[in-house]
Image 1 (cartoon, rainbow, N blue to C red):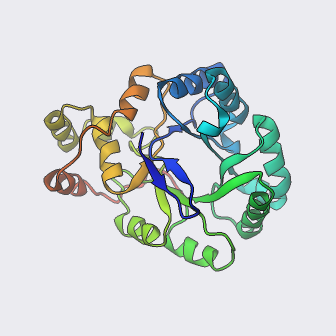
Image 2 (cartoon, rainbow, N blue to C red):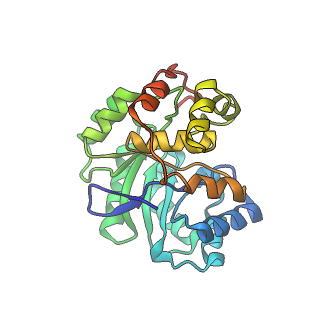
Length: 265
């Protein structure tokens, strides 16, 4: 596993497990399996309704809590009572602290919610703050109203929606960019993984199409949190550090840009 340095001095795994689609016992089993395979970053959210199961998977795995980077998110309806929502998340997961607490979307009262995260950081309940679905204009407005700079921005990024200018801008601000749709997103993954360019480059490197795309993200300095419950896919998603892409590969993938956003935020 490779790690990236955050702007607060912490480090974070560059690859993690996204848990959006995981529920119940399947979630518990997948989280435990992922940790056994070597994952150390887990991404959940109150919206996913699986925080308790993610935490149960951590306990089942036997991996020490302090070896895991645990991320969860507040959803806009929670922003008005963010302090209580943070305590509720800690209680649901049965943990003493959250490694990164994010705002899931911009909203009218997101500054007040973020300030509650800042208070939680001071109290030791949260170690760092992040934001999701913030782009240049949203971030510039938001940044002037808060104290602690976010460490991570999560956005939709994949070969059909590369968002290059925004990615470079956010990185230049000292933020780590992380993609929650590295493989195109629900309903679009098959289309992206069967793209002729992706297939040809995957064959060239002797890897799967998913591995190729995840490696492309890392080459751009973008961290990834792909979701899966398949042992094979979980293993493959970690096996992206043994090869690299050359300039010709990167140019071929850059040419796939369609500005094709697959979710509304």
